[in-house]
Structure formats: C-alpha cells, structure tokens
Amino acid sequence: MLSWLQRDDLSFPPLDKALREPNGLLAAGGDLSAERLLAAYRHGCFPWYQEGQPLLWWSPDPRTVLYPDELHVSRSLRKRMRQESFTVTFDQAFADVIDGCAGPRSYTQETWITSHMKAAYLKLHEMGVAHSVEVWRDRQLVGGLYGLAIGRLFFGESMFSQANDASKVGFVTLVERLQAWGFKLVDCQMPTQHLASFGARAISRRAFAEALAEYLDQPSSARWGA
Image (cartoon, rainbow, N blue to C red; front, side):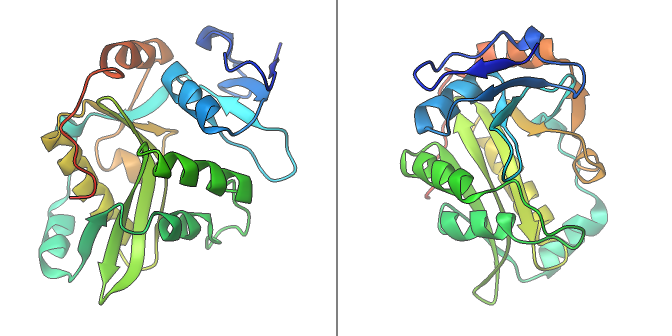
C-alpha cells in the first residue's frame, strides 16, 4: 500500500515498504522543500514525477551505483579528452546546467525537471549541497550534470550534452575529482548502458542503505568552487 506524506511531517516510510511494481515507488505527496529533499536523500529515496502527477518518491531495488575507484574510461574517450578543447568547471553555472538538463531530448519533449524541481535544487545549491559540473568549448556551455554531495556520497541527478562526448567528459572529470576528495560512492539511481560503460553496477537496496549509514556523516575534502 502506497504511503502519502503530510506537509508537516518530513519522515518517510521504511525503504522495505517500497512497491515491487512499479519498482521502488515508496511514497507520494509532501513537498519539495529543501528540508524534505535532504531528508529524502539521507533516507535513500529521491523525487521523480511528470508534470501533472502527484509528487512521487522512489527507492529502487536494485540501485545503480558507481564506486569511484571502479571508474572505467575507454581508450577512445581518454584520447578525445586529451585532444578535444573542452574546459570543465564546477559550480560556475548551476542554473544553466539544470536548464540544459531540463531541455528537450532527441527522443522526447517531456521532462521530469519541472519549474518546481528547478527551484528546489537551486535552493539546495544556494545551501551548498547541490553542485554542478560544466563543460565548455569556445566559452560556450556544451554539456554538464548536477547532483547532491552529502558526506562522502554524491547523488547524481541528470546530465545533458550538446556536443559529442561533452557529458561523458564532465562525468569522468567529476568522478576522478570525487575519488581524490575521498568520496566512496556515486548514486546513479537507475541503470543505463551509458552508465554501465563507466563501471556502474547494481547493488541491493540493503547494501545502498548500509552505504548511507556508513558515509553520510563522514567529511570529505571537497572544494567545489576551486
């Protein structure tokens, strides 16, 4: 039975109460306040819904993650990273990155990054929790991604690319930086062939919850604006 959240209560149901079909649907309702979003990620769930739907919260089982020390980069991509004139920055254009991620795709005009979602994550960015990676070419933003950093965990949300391999370059640069900063896990949420090519793999919901318990409150050496 699906749980409905109350606006004055930031708690979520236990993760093992998530539905099997659709996989991982944990709760509905509530709001997108910064406090609730932080509570959600710390609990092990995230919001994902379309415009016109109720606000839905998910905790899929299995969960797709990438361990930074397991990052795989193909030789062709390494070569392109050396040869291509991309410049990668952090936290220099968060609003532009989230706009890029919300833009139309070749396969659909729909987006789950609604105006309310944008406002919510912009607030988290102002709080120093949400971060962006920008990929530039000739001073033009051609790709990027954003997500949340809590403790030694990074929760990836979305990426976009307007040039061949731009988002890949941003992702590899991010993961290598996260590894240097002592991060232990990148939450990729759902599986894609694109993420699998970098070494992302599925772990059980229980294993993910254990990672949360171990690393959420451990400090990292991250310097996002540097």
